[in-house]
Length: 109
Image (cartoon, rainbow, N blue to C red; front, side, top):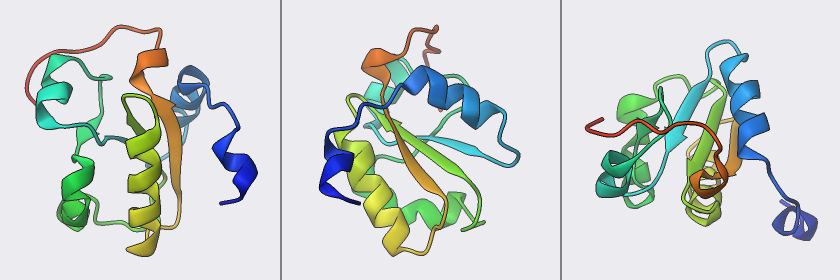
């Protein structure tokens, strides 16, 4: 990651379209379980950033495209860094749900 990556704006809505058209992709929400239950993007999986080390239990294919989001994009950036260190090769921060214009799903994972 370069210093310029910190300043570039990511459009979660465009990235979700790319996620949905990418074969074998995983949409990963790294907010807390309570945040996830209060409203998440349909089809996403929840692994809070504080528990990202447990990702290997849910994300077996380290070469699968993983699109990561949180509330604003900050925790997603942390999770992407950790996942890459764990050997995941196609991991991207797609920003924050606060900029998502679609409907959210409420309830359990």
